Length: 226
Length: 368
Image 1 (cartoon, each protein chain N blue to C red):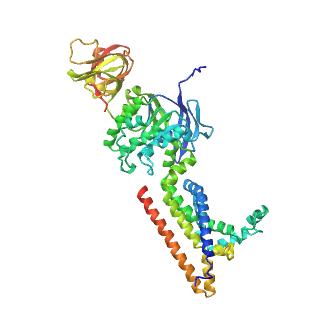
Image 2 (cartoon, each protein chain N blue to C red; image 1 turned 180 degrees about the vertical axis):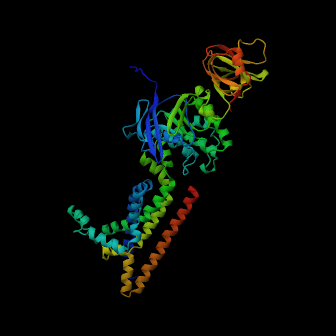
Image 3 (cartoon, rainbow over the protein chains, first blue to last red; image 1 turned 90 degrees about the horizontal axis):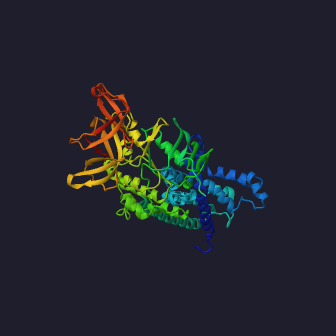
């Protein structure tokens, strides 16, 4: 039954989700630190912008990305002028789309974590001779690791489950941009229910396993940090 | 080549900042870099804002700050906090919850050594000064409020600061913990060679610890004077609504065990007080209520009163219906002393400024 089964969509799905999450952790940190610090109208507007992907239909996001990133689009043409291959219908393009699509899931928990922490621990560390990077790695990061875990989990899970954005930017190119969710849709359309079942079940088990591990880690951190 | 300094080293400058409705406008200040300087004022007077601006926490602060010859703030250019070499103790201990007591203590020490600072304060010293030997293995979460603050002070000292700033370090503690931590602070005052800035709204803390007091009101510095002067003038903001009294710094010089007395020295005059538990040589602060002082023309020969000091009358000011407040100076050391005397005595003895008298002190209390 599994002979002739194509597992590449699973591999591509997790590769995209992993890359997206790693890049998001790096990008969201300064963004969330800044958002936690500012106040007033500016903050409200920026928070709304960050939260936008939560509300917009993925196809709307995907459509704008397609327009912007295509070799004739604003960003795509600049990209092409450097001699890079087009971002549309490529893995890189899908990762860029996923980063924006999952941004709020990473930024929001981090921002809340930084706000709860307040500026005091960082002030204390500064008076004890720690510079900005040192302060982040020796104090802020250890005290917000639960928010990092939560954000990374949500961003990863959200990216694994995405459909519309990938379809719009990446198309449905087997072996390149065909992710599990799209492959399952294809199988169902072609009445290949067995293959759809196998992929769906694997997704279900993998997701459950990842979440169980993450929540277990979260419990352990809770005990330690209080 | 030696350089002669024209003025003694000071933390000096001029600061202003607006935070919401509150405006800090210090005017020029120069805090000598020796001993303990208390910044005293009621809540909302701007003490904390002032010290936070000095430390560099407020990004909107304007003006200038110099620490000795080192510019900290100049034309909006601010030296980053971690390069200022300050020790800062907050109201709440603010220990790092992800580190144990030892991890907290060595956080600043490691960075100080890495930056090549000379270690003048050792781990063993702070453990001894602040009584931490029993706490080293403890988890930060299990410490009491007073213990946490002691660890926080030790952590700050181990970062080898050039100045120690303390923002009401006892304000968050209950009365019992306050009493328990005070002796540690007094010990630090005597042991440390770095200047201490101590914010407080408690006269008791100021009179026990400070060498000079800066008074703040509504975001301004209204007075800056030596502790003797601040404590021993009528209407001092330290004792609003309290009976006038003088506080004198003295040194314990002799224990007279069989008599149950201790001899202390104020300037070069001796006073006898009930036996003190401190060791000979330690600093003791005496409180003398203005009502406890009588004036005599000459040193009495036959009297049961042990303590009499030659004084000069500096001024006589009205006090209430029947008495006046006299400002006296000890003849030998010119330290100030206040005496409350009836108007009737002023008349009958013809008391006037400039005269020399002997102040007989009926009772002396010790600050504790």
